[in-house]
Amino acid sequence: MLVLLPPSEGKAGSGDGAPVALDRLSLPGLTAARGAVLEALVDLCRGDQDVAAEVLGLTPGLRGEIAKNAGLPEAGARPAGEVYTGVLFDNLGLATLDAAAYGRAERSLLVFSGLWGAVRVSDRIPSYRCSMGVKLPGLGALGAYWRSATATVLPEVADGLVLDLRSSAYAAAWKPAGEVASRTATVRVLQERDGKRTVVSHFNKATKGRLVRDLLVTGAEPKTPGELMDALRELGHRVELAAEGTARKAWQLDVVVTEVH
Image 1 (cartoon, rainbow, N blue to C red):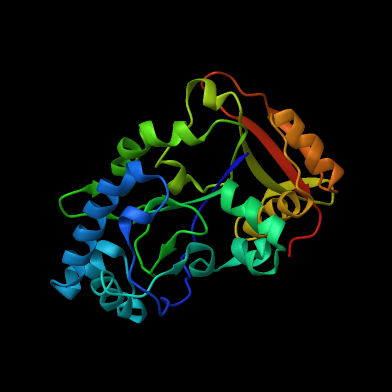
Image 2 (cartoon, one colour):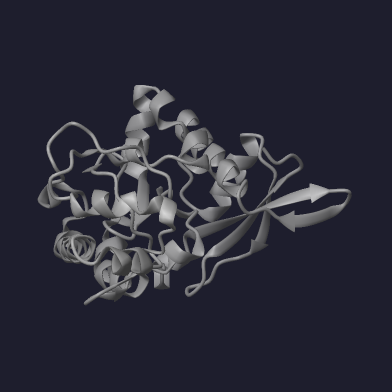
């Protein structure tokens, strides 16, 4: 099973170790593209600060992120699973998994990124600020840029069930197609209250984090979207089929919750 996750806007600080080594990150087919994005981002942030703030969409209170980006080549790296914070990753709780569950996380989780394209949770990266919606000078919109780079790389590692939990901005970087789409499942979180259902936004991340944690802790290994529904139901989640997948479209699953927390 391959689980596709969005990153988090909030990130822990960079580590005290050696800087990122692009040639040691997983998915080596993305190395050249990562180098190009890193160079473009660093050049932007070492130039006019006002331009950098506008391109990156930074408020005055976040302008310190520009200096952080400017120093990325020298910044200490740490495992991506420690860099990404926020609601989804808090509920996923990688740091509290036992060795077996964490090993499954290393093998199955793939975090998408405006800067790195996609990384494993064990890949060592520095803290950065660059969302997938950014248009970098010389490269253009990162969603489109990464879509070209991932077109041949991602299908090579998507050899089983694909659970796609990305937000729309990060889903733009790679869209499972053909035979891969037929074994891909997306998840929508709905809150049911007084007989009515609404789509939740912020708290859907918490639910998705708990779904992934439950799968990792129990060692569930569903191989199809149907088996995934069964596994999640056995774990106590209320899951409904919203739409079956086709050769061109992923399966759509609804997870229904009554309390949002």
